[in-house]
Image 1 (tube, rainbow, N blue to C red):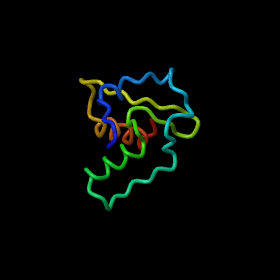
Image 2 (cartoon, rainbow, N blue to C red; image 1 turned 180 degrees about the horizontal axis):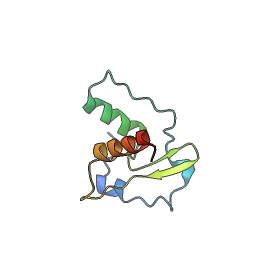
Image 3 (cartoon, rainbow, N blue to C red; image 1 turned 90 degrees about the vertical axis):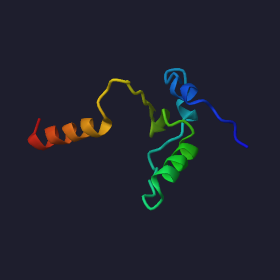
Image 4 (cartoon, helix red, strand yellow; image 1 turned 180 degrees about the vertical axis):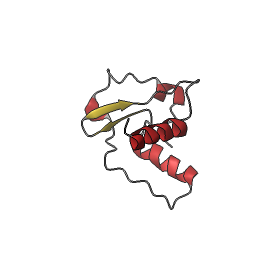
Length: 87
């Protein structure tokens, strides 16, 4: 049985203190959209180990979320609108 790590511990990892080579490289990761979303999320977590701290090629990535931030979908939609308008 795998040891469960509290989500707060995963989220609190200091990206500056982590050896980049120890992070999972997600650059070739492919999402299987035929699998239900809940199972897909479980597969991602199993593969990535820490969904808050991973690597894309040679770049370490740390995800952080603000409680009062707008929804990611809204931010992304605004980004696409700005790109389409040339801003």
